[in-house]
Length: 350
Image (cartoon, rainbow, N blue to C red; front, side, top):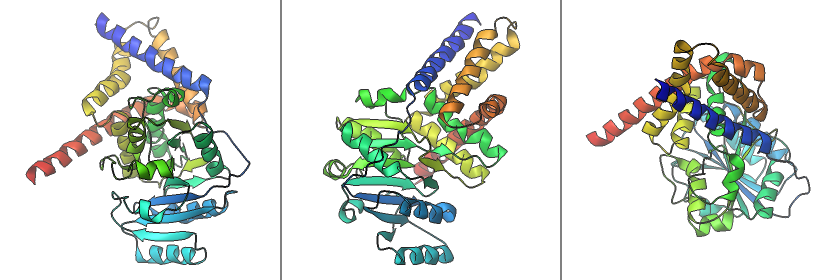
């Protein structure tokens, strides 16, 4: 029991150290206002979640950066929604609709003409300055890709319990400022919601064609680093927000995707993480004296407060809901495991 206790405490200290590093280094996208004389090709991936698409398109048109082309990439859409989006595109020839297999991005190299390639999820909303600021990071630091993690918009208690888990795992496992300094693929946690790439490097190295189908665009950062190019992961700050629908299944799926991504699909390692994060502190709380609990409680409290400030969340709610969020993390892992087992079972059957 002593060995187990020390293991959990060491793990808590390591997580706290990473969170503290992220908090002090403040890895947020900063503003850069002067416009660049460059062009950007934007690919918006639509996964039957068109409720926020028109808002996203309007936010792109409102950008201070005007030299862009937008491809709305979808596999299926309700007829009425498809007509609405087509009408929007008819008013501005910079916007186009392309229908196809969402896992196949090979067409982008043929259609995109911009100096930079931006990949956006349809359930995001961008604010003025995002494109310019991302181009600045890419050009000044000579990188192949910049990944920006959107700030989540939490509309319900259910989302408050599930959606912050992605940022929680990211910020207590990955020192984001070090991603740019080291080219090792080990430091390559990314997301598919907002990515900006150097188009020439992307098409020359065939990054889109080499993507792992199971990870999709989230696999781009690893490929960039494998080709010895610089990469960076930043928090969205006030530039981009994630606007998910009020749907329990969608929220759990989003957190599950992040869990698989951060552990490179290795659910055994993910189990060790979840066990040490959820079950470990619980066992210590039930067995030990209150005097011994001061250290783990303090580390957990300070970590949650720092993550809340980094992700523009209410620190009071983050601390109060932490126990429930940890229960949901266990639920997310179980669903991710069952989903993977079901998928592998179908593949063996075939």
